[in-house]
Length: 581
Image 1: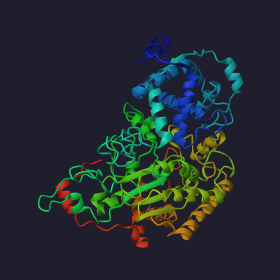
Image 2 (image 1 turned 135 degrees about the vertical axis):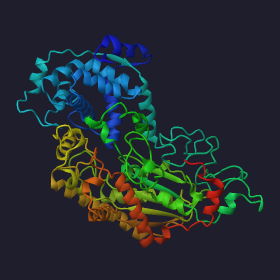
Image 3 (image 1 turned 180 degrees about the vertical axis):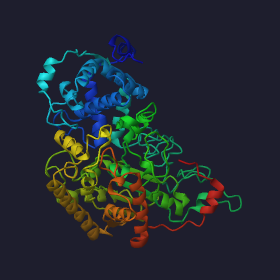
Image 4 (image 1 turned 90 degrees about the horizontal axis):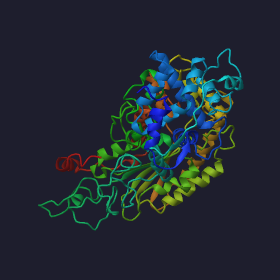
């Protein structure tokens, strides 16, 4: 509807439907920006930013899309705002209408006066440092104070009450903080639902009212008719009188798959269509709530625990392979026995003190696992300038040893813990710096170099050191990453067989080797990197990473390869897809 600017119509209708505590619009916008954008960027909520931080980023991106939609579709700014609000999911639409009711008239006036999105948001006070800009400054730019003084359109101060988006943000925040499934009635860390750290992250709970029924369970007191480990195999063979679990799974070397990781391990992906104005339409944001519920991660398509393609709008595209699928192919008894304990922004300290505790394994009643510990960047990556906020080698040693000592009381005998080193992130700048970022695709006016400088100016960059136009800082970040990798490597060398229930393995994170093979086949570096954040391995890389890692296991670490279950064909004939996922 064309009524988004009428506070007496659409915005007031929204207001009347609300019944709870009221907030100023800007306070609500700050809360939503902090939760969404900080998590998207992997930045802790308590990190101090500059120039407006994520409030500034959120405003600038929104105004940019409005201006670009107006330009592409030859619509007025008002019509473009209506268009963008109309495309959003219902949960977000009311909030968009309210924002437009408060700021819309001023945005119209400023854009019609050829102000850039950065400058619009400075005038609206979402941004507070006019030297931080994503888009090129106009040649005749007036001081922001002068633009404010001459602004004619009024700002309508609106108090808003709770809307559906408040519930969504509250539920998501619970999961963001605990890293455990939101829906888990029996508190066994497994869930019958998919999103919100459910079965896309760890195998589906086939009975959420029985805490001793979950994927990976080894022992049971239940009858054969109860699928105690949720692998879809149950019942009794009429000839032998033995359970199918005993006949076809016992003694086959079944091992679960776990990753303790960061956003790369979780497979972080923001749909490029979300910020590419030419691609935005009625279906662009249709699955945005589900994507938010999974923290903008796609673990079910990841290199570690991937198992299915998703048909959501904005889903990653490309081939699918994973270590879990490789293990399952060899032994169908591990169906659903995966756990993706990877968190956006995870560092070794948070892993040791908090994140690792969301792992579910019991050393006496569960099956062994192959657990990959892969924190490839956040110990050297943050939004702060310099190296002072990076993890030191001593801290890295203490953090990794803390995690290992915790695992000593969790993992069953026969498990393996596999460490990767940190990545050399200098490839990000090398591959992308002179390419156009999706937000600048309408006029080719924003390169990744500008994107890096903008986020660093606001101190909200996912990685000041590597996403930096200054080679000195890129090199310093790699130097620290190499030092931390060496710490992990030495721990593995010194403690390979120290713990009785698992051994240790180390290999360098293989992105450089994968990139070399990719380029030898005619590919280019930028094709392996997520385009929106310019920071994460994309779906192509996740596929190549799984294939390369499996080949490396076979060649260098054959003890990580489980035996083939000779009963696989019988399991498939009897149980089909074993209940799916």
